[in-house]
Length: 409
Image 1 (cartoon, rainbow, N blue to C red):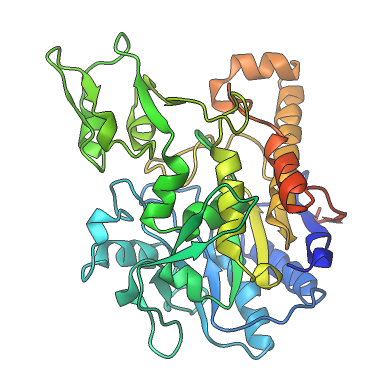
Image 2 (cartoon, rainbow, N blue to C red):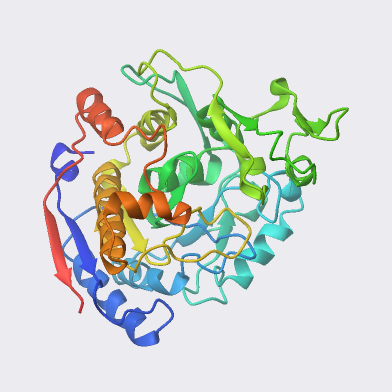
């Protein structure tokens, strides 16, 4: 990316204090209209094919991102004369409708059916196809074509990865409009623009590289031996021991966190088996995602746009296949080119949302955090702003840029 692109402003459509409802047609029209105005102010040489990078959510995730708010991106691109447009995401390393094993070569129908049911296909609001970015058989001839599940990219110092592995469909995208739904996340802490591109754009091997230092820690005093973690482990790394409790075979564990997500008793935590010497004891996933982000973007930084949906903000990400409730009031939308600056701002807005919630309950912020586990934000090993300092020091990408706030009340 040109250094000037890194410092371009972020637009913030602020719906706080309004009657905003994500499902309301009038709000969808208003937000799309404003986003289209902003896009017309961003001068970039977009190239085809264009990927609308999305996350369709699991079957029972009712708080997921809505395709209706991506309509302004599609309309803008078509107005610019670009018609080779697809929505897409990769398979995941855990089990389920979007799982890699469940959508092997030649049979990715479970994923495609789910995408259709959530409005992400040619019959949905956007009227564009959905492709599974690491499943070449889902590509659209003449529109969005790729023939490789995975592409290896060499990196350069100071990147700590020697190579990164991206999905074939992500690799061939000329431009990327990264639509992402902000949530909290048990491992990455914040699921926002960087996670949407790294975990969403990487191949299965790339995902495993980023996750590899985490393993589940099982509190066997709390565990009831229900076996749901064993049933849902995508690599069969868990099995019952002689006491009828789950036991881990570390050599098979890929650190995906699915066991933690499905455990209804909350007796599984993902912990770092050993701390790398990169950061002297700080959990490293946010840093590794930052390095991976630099590796997979290559020379396409100037053809990347991030649009973050800050509504229905939940304790877990949309990969959790269960209904969730919003933790704080809806915030709005962020539009900008620098994904690290977007994430930095999103962290601040979430904290402000928790502070507002605490004030509504007539208690201090600290008391609010202690009282409500569902609203916990500061994870035990959360590195805070350290990953942003790291990316600025090593790659000269700033995390703080001008903010243009648009009051939508």
